[in-house]
Image (cartoon, rainbow, N blue to C red):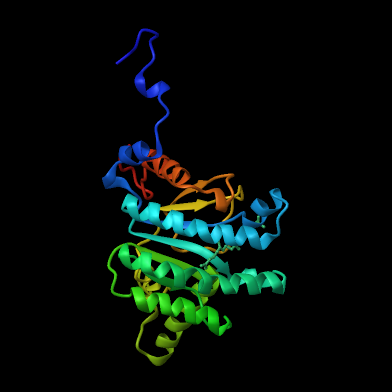
Length: 261
Ligand code: FPP
């Protein structure tokens, strides 16, 4: 309906976060969202603070986005928390990042239980300090019977490494005579990846203005919709998440075909 000046109500009223949340199509919320949480360092630098303050702020933001995704009915979120390439950072920063799971997960478990959220992990525990792997394993064990949203951490994770490990397992089976080379299909490779239990991501979000994948879920993102934003991860609010999902809902996913033309 138009008012005296010819404005539609929707043109001039800025919608609140909860209104925008309400307006999303519930049957088209991405089931699995993968997130590259970039820009903690720049966020801190812009405030003349050390990088670790940005990482701590980024860690707190995981709570906010986990809650929001859960409220929106998302089935799983996969967060790129530490890549196989991140070992190249100064040792003080690596040490700080390795302490975060302990600091974060232990205090988050009661809320994860309340929200029925299950913690999972992709990546390798080998090479990670004991206190880090203990904290992740503890969170996974405590939440293992929750059957709501999955909060999946990619930690000490690299996609090429994941593919190499899968190929090695399949090659071993061929060598042992339990698998024929022609039985190696896309589905079989998918089953041998660390994400075997998860559906492919529907939406990938990368914060902080970089437009690249940085060795994240290369196989799994083949048909995923991408959303890049200039916003640094510590400032990626619920509203930004809703914005990404609004954009996702406007897209026409064809998976290589002509569906929905
Ligand atoms: C990228 O920002 C961020 C990371 C490499 C680490 C992300 C980790 C967290 C948000 C916390 C993880 C918490 C748990 C519980 C596992 P950057 O440092 O590359 O930022 P920059 O590009 O601005 O320097």
